[in-house]
Image (cartoon, rainbow, N blue to C red; front, side, top):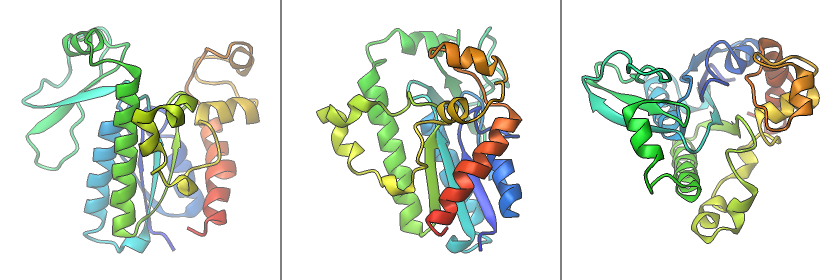
Length: 243
């Protein structure tokens, strides 16, 4: 029987959301490493660090990991002595998670009007293929890390725009796509899409009707969505794979 749940993701996973709902259903402790706006590099690092901390007091078979991967174009940079918050209209507090560590990660995405974000997103290094490659690298690295330690896990994405249909046809990406252990993935295209198609709840920013009427609109699931997602997607999947 599992004793602890370690989770990672962005704002779709940040507390309180589906990890807390799932932990309540499983009656286990949850250590949620999610943070709003963080990308897949940081999601991977934080989950790995949290797992290694849990292994100091638990056996591998006691731990379950759940990861909801985020936007491939999100970025982060490590530095020491960062200010508590970048002074910009759209930004996020630096991510600091290593105990007694001197450094932190400055987070960026397309909506951030920070100096680092503006430099990166206007550079030639900002392109879809590069971001997909980096995301698959992080997925594969985390998969290998967990499987090497003998830790059960499941993965999914926050929307259907994280992993693209074209990935398997791109030679620069397809070799990594084929190395992913898809048997440990939830049978959905993304949490947002599942919530829109399988519930009638309004999202935090838009109504359910608005989400159905405009396929380009994305919004954060409500707590009711998160409860349903944990109960009707994750819990049955765990039962089917005997975690």
